[in-house]
Length: 185
Image (cartoon, rainbow, N blue to C red; front, side, top):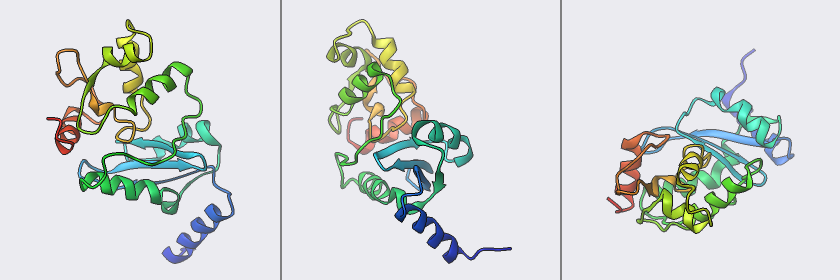
């Protein structure tokens, strides 16, 4: 049996409306390639440069619950703000974030990361110092590497102590492109 695209869309929209979805996701086209984007009722839960949904579903279920559904409507707000960012019309995101399940150290690093202004960079060591752990630059680097909401939590704005670009989940060319978009490079 084949289901029409319209019926499929109506089913997915109804599931969201009836609060039957723990996490909704979709793949968003962007100038840096397709992005996997997911949101829960609490807020944006994930952005991944690995746009293949199957690789993400178990992780999302562990974060927010087993009812994970591809639902473009669930990420409408995130899609709009990401589009505005890539068009150069948005410098700060107004999205609620779902940081459930993260250790307190990680949460404190990500909250400080969110304060790094558009078009500016900081270092791993400077972030570590700002959260009161000046010797934890490597641990901050690990948090950046595992950041499940890149771009919105702008780990691309964190560079090495010499100012050099260092590892990035989306690849150094994506990090460079994001910094150029913001005028930081």
